[in-house]
Length: 246
Image (cartoon, rainbow, N blue to C red):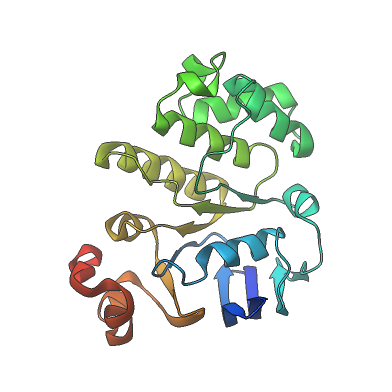
């Protein structure tokens, strides 16, 4: 029996004046899947993330979240239903401590089986941030700032986690550690994950499937190996980087 669908994007389009940012974009994400979303700059990845999370409304098409049409549901209600995300540029509350940043999110959707304090403690432990709990974000390394942002996204109820270039700017070793932590969340908590990332070797280590955007639409959908050998993808995006996915 196949897993239920966590997310279904149906014929989504988005126009900004005369610019068509997305055109007839459709794909599904199974519950518990770790999926990558790739494409050249300007392909529409960020716009698609904004539409899925509810910050931008599509010009056409629909978004279904665990079988329910959420196209017109506002972002804060999607968050309460467990749709969580990070951003390309880390967005933390700089005047708050690490623990307070996580507490803000946890207090909005804490699971019924634990208190806010327990949820904050669990997130700090999950991302090895206990020693940084009382520090401000400005005192942290980039890797730890990204851990805090992911932890804040996860705090409370999280069923779908969307990571927008969370490995960007990290060293190879830092990225490897973060990948291990994200895959552990997927494995132990069953969280569905969608990853936007430009470093293809990072994606190959994380995902079982890739969706490729180019010129505002989906041009390929398959395993990393299939994508690496897709002539249309190689021409549009991978080029000499093809070996990074092998």
